[in-house]
Length: 71
Image 1 (cartoon, rainbow, N blue to C red):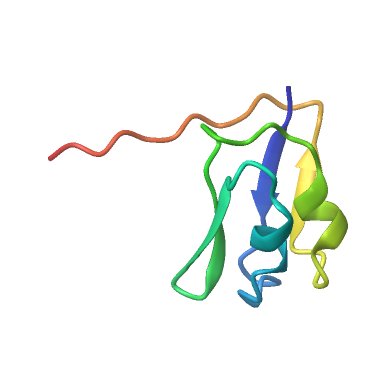
Image 2: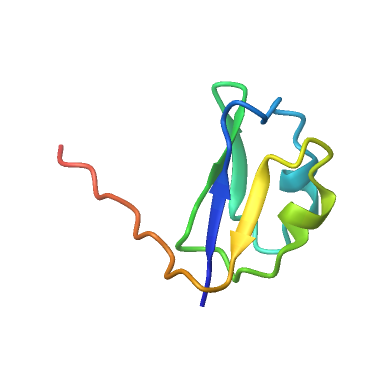
């Protein structure tokens, strides 16, 4: 598997990565892209289409598990 990371300094929140994600693993929150590792299939479409090079896919890393919120 792999890991997707988003550089918040480079991300402008344009939503291009969101539009091309086939599994809807990306969303825009607080004007930045947010990644949902539970849905992601690490296809690399987000990295390919990001106009600001803010998204990177590293196939050598294990995906980060989402933190569960305690209510």
